Length: 85
Image (cartoon, rainbow, N blue to C red; front, side, top):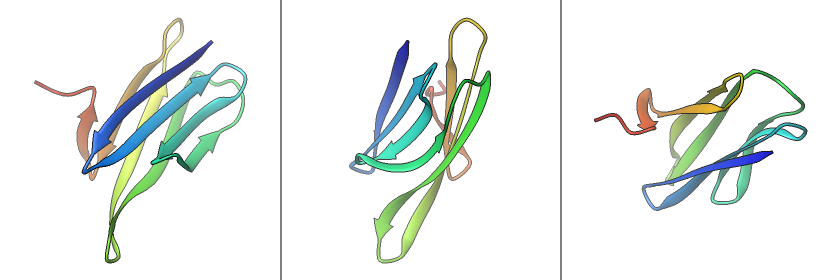
């Protein structure tokens, strides 16, 4: 089973994919930033959003769950997915 989450941040598309057999992957504008290979109950992915002129923002993604996968994404230590009310 493959799941995909996607959001737009400052005009860039951030996508996280999870598959039982292929592991987890983090993409920014279709460029692979990080991956975990194989089956795990918990994962962490780290990448960067390149804003140009040497400026970057760090992305951290936590994935986990037993029967369904839940995801939390942070950019510069601020939770952006799922959105907090």
